Amino acid sequence: MSKRKNKNNNAASGFSALMRQPVAQLITVAVIAFVVYLIAVGGSGGKNSNGLATEISVEEAYQMYQNGGFVLDVRTQQEWDEYHAPNTTLIPLDQLPARISELPKGKDIVVICRSGNRSQQGRDILSNAGFNATSVRGGLSEWRRKGYPVE
Image 1 (cartoon, one colour):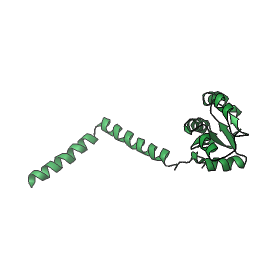
Image 2 (tube, helix red, strand yellow; image 1 turned 180 degrees about the horizontal axis):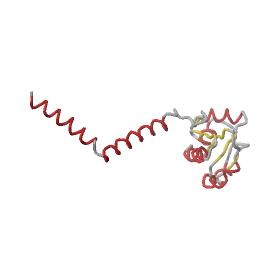
Image 3 (cartoon, one colour; image 1 turned 90 degrees about the vertical axis):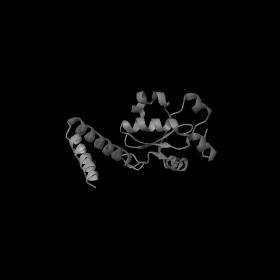
Image 4 (tube, helix red, strand yellow; image 1 turned 45 degrees about the horizontal axis):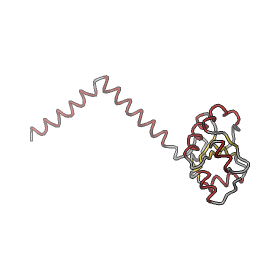
């Protein structure tokens, strides 16, 4: 039994000695700070800082569209020419950072693309620039499958 006690005491004192080292203290603080950061970032529950969902369904997007929401299409001009939702705005994703001043501040922006991948990137660009933006899961492909208007 005394051997077991010594092993436990040695392990505890080894950890205590390690934690007295400045490098170990810095690493511990860094790990704790990183965990707190992850909790803070992930704690939004899929919502932007203004409470707008980071991603919405096509049905939710169509509802916002019908209520006069600003819909931003981030596909290419060629994709836009094939079909697009009426009364929406085209700014291709690769042009978005340079044309961000063309967008309405203070208004929710629904970002859409063909399938939903580029719209997430567009949403992130806009959110980082202080806009209220969400992306559409399924994109215009799903929009069209649902029978929502396209031209």
